[in-house]
Image (cartoon, rainbow, N blue to C red; front, side, top):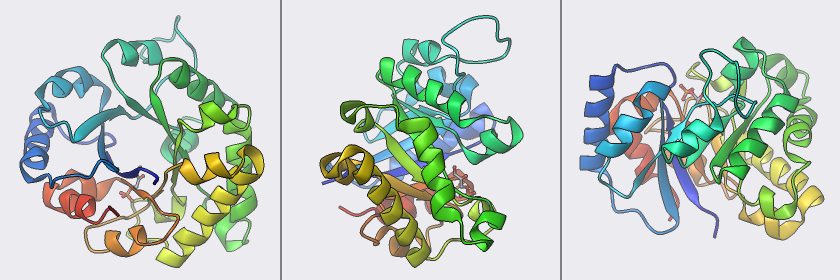
Length: 253
Ligand code: 13P
């Protein structure tokens, strides 16, 4: 059975104190998770080390929201995978659409980031998803397939099995406009089909594919009930403990 994951992406929100109290509320309200469920919280870089020490519940794991594509060097202001590993960060979001759009990250750079994460035994949460114009032209399947191809298809089967994928249609991020659960299922099934062609059915069926884009407490259960949706990557609603806890509670068992 694939891991069911509720992942929070705080993006560039919350002061340190606000983050502390949000995590405390999450710990207090966290339901008992099954061995098949995980909760991941992607924190801003400055808080990773300190907040990790304050999390007592084994149910919550932290993630970085990004890393640099080089291993080390003269890249002022950037954070490497080696640095993340040195403070035991277990997950890292790679290729979020905001990174692709505002910071011009390319599929080739994302492939490098994936390689660094895997070498450090950090689980990449690889984001893919199409902009509105591509969806309107009905080219979303080809678009997402190219993203997977250019950043992940160099991996072998064993490496691929360590990746978590998040499908986040850009038109649904922060817009309040969620993909319908059928649209999510259709794309998740497509992604799994693409993975199956490239890596075989054992790998394809073992990879968790999360949906992201305006997931809330009120729509999570319906989206997560789809057979190929294995949880969510949540922005806005993850900043409110009560909302995110509802999303956790909506994970399949
Ligand atoms: P929202 O949940 O705010 O739409 O953001 C989704 C997202 O980008 C998560 O990474």
